[in-house]
Image (cartoon, rainbow, N blue to C red):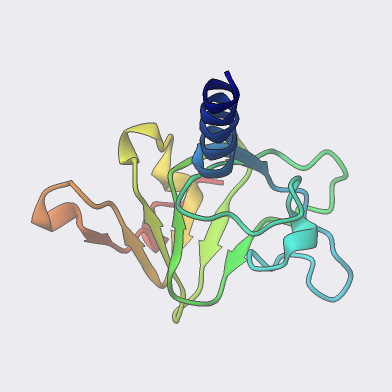
Length: 135
């Protein structure tokens, strides 16, 4: 009985600890308002990782504070950018979307840096999209 209970608790722990989680962009942290790597800018108060399903909503405040990725190595499971919102990847930054089938309109990504879609054809592995942003 105790072994079964321990087994169930371990399954519950690992499924919540390592499963996909939704991270919603809030932005606006004073001094770091658009910093992707600032935990206070996310609904979970954690920076998204490779297990994260990220949502970038249209900001209601009118401040238009959207995330900017300035460093290499950012990875997410999926990315949803709501109409009117955007993500910017600066020259030294990079973003890998591990599950590109769950990435909506990539034209909302300003990629001066690198955007990766593993599992796609070699032409699609690394894409610069600066000219494709639609306002």
